Length: 315
Image (cartoon, rainbow, N blue to C red; front, side, top):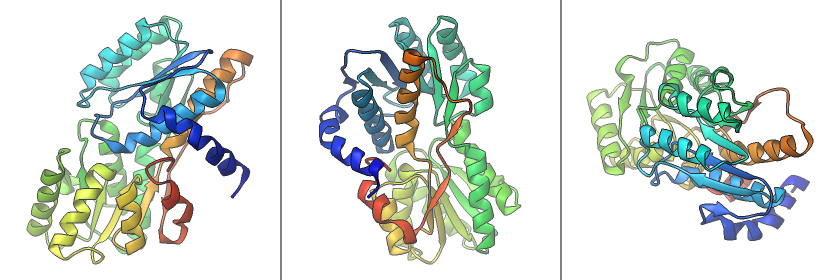
């Protein structure tokens, strides 16, 4: 175990008291993280953990806010409310620039420093006046996954898009198709976020398209029901299966040979690093000269030990 993980393990117990709370209190600066995630999406627990631990280590107040149903218009209002509260900085996703660019730019114009994380692009972050971007270029990640799948002989696929109103989700599917060198066409489905519906829609697609070579899911919300669908159809382990992001069920499926790989965008870093960067910027005037790519990285069965230990918590 290297020094970083020793430090993280040593602070995990102290940080655990903060993880269930929306606000971590401290005496220094105050930073608000606004995500587009609905309350039901457990993948964002890793974001919350990274935020809480960074707040504790830097001695700052951190707050996590989100639209309960994932409604982006609601998220825009939350950003406006966060800016009106006068924080030292806002950390936010840019899930849809058409909806969110206005309130983010207004916060910047009001003198609030902003860092964009997770969704959007470095170029879009610059357009709204953000200090920097910390995240995974989604199209590039999808393209890399498509190249990998093409090398493994995949020629057709189903992309299970559980958040189709987010452009970054579609970029993942499009990048995968381009990496394979084929048209996306109708190979992407709007699965919704209800687990039973996702399972049923995956089964319906594969029954209607039995020659499909592969399945691509975009995170635990779509991956977990897809695992159940493949098990029910007798395809688990027989159809090529890749996914974005990690979670307990995804890690186990990689271990079992049901999922070939997971793309880890390291969400812990997406919340942790902006707090560290902002606190140092406000205290000492130092700022990294470039955006930070937190991913993509491919997780396979060969490297699961530490990933499995921290999946859903820090990975």
